Image (cartoon, rainbow, N blue to C red; front, side, top):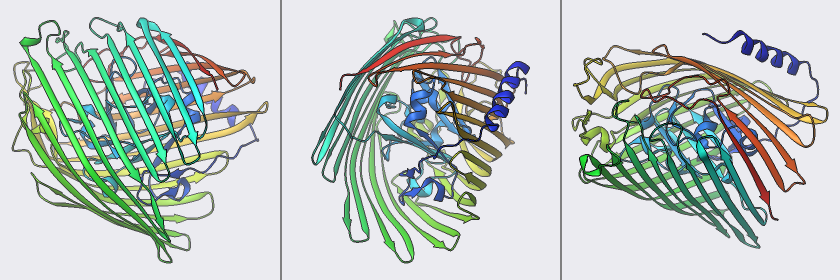
Length: 599
């Protein structure tokens, strides 16, 4: 790996200096809600990463896509600034194999996984992000092939009116306002956000608008959001030579859930509706030349039941959803999915054992079962060994099946993907030190990707195909350390992951260019009450040989508990690199911002 000696020296010096400190602070236990059976973080027998609201505030990232880049094992392939269009990959999977949730509501789209990140919320509305790695189909169903991201929104705790404003490179202007009101038996939170930019190169301008509303009344909870994104897509799709592409997306969500508790039984029913609209133009200033319009709707109802007894915790659930797609290119399609869930957690002395199964029935494919097993052994309060195994499955999207474009063609004869995944890990957690090491393996069959017989042939179309066998092996290690210096908390993290794919089939477009080597590091440091600073480092080397190093930084000042000023700098050493489709990422850029609490 070609890492600058200067940067490596800085990292090693920081690492050594931190471990010379003796003062520590207590890290609060977080209860994981991205599971049917809610558990404290330390008791889970899976690899999980939690990004807290405090970490979000200090990060140089200005959006969820950039924020997730700091999590080892996560590959966000972006096109442009501020996560304008981005795809989520976990442990070498592709964007169709990962699931995004908002407060537990699945945000998958039947058209394509390219839309998974469309409805991502403003960071100001997020309490924490739960990242579950490895097969999660047993918990969520078929879309969580390689993992899932659950975005937990902020609780309504106080009466607040807050405004924020930022301006940065490329005429990047953003602003927002958040209001929350607490009542005796509930509350309401409403947030409006707007952003626009001229873009960092030709035809990469954009305009974003979003609304988020959350309301509680007794046991009832309402979550709703609307996001509209209009952007120039220079080389984003098709080929890098397609510089005049353009796209507009609109994503809506409404979810209503309620929580009942009867003795030792907790019942949580929910109804939800999600809509996504995608307009694509191959030539922005000549729409009739080539135009795609896709509108998808997903309506569903689910109920989860948790029973606490002397035998442990039992979780049972059922989720029924129906999706509709109206498209001028893919034609009109629909799909009904019915999924039942069951899992039970046994705790015997220091052992915990959680077998479970999900069974899904698809109206256009067969019924499939996703069994899985989590096992853990706690040697002490701080040290735990864990392992899990699970079967996972994904049916093709409507784009996989039916798309016809100038450079791509779908395949209606595709078979669903399937895989068996195993993981072995250790956790060591104290009030000051967190270490997690995990080894993982995934043996997949019939993986779906777009391929060419001859990648050098520009006339040949990419075609959706099943691949016979793909084996993915790897490991990752995370280290986090907290300490007190000059009466202020300081934090340091370091992570490394290695992934290797074995595939005997032809050249593929998306899935099999995993991050082979990934190094993430960051430090939050504070020397005065007024200022806090963050520096983050990321090194990436992909399976096909591309490598790059990115360093970001942020300085923030807090005034009288009401006003915050910040200056963030991304890619401060002007690294030239691409993450997908040969789209050049922006060079060094700045954002200056402030937020003010009126009360």
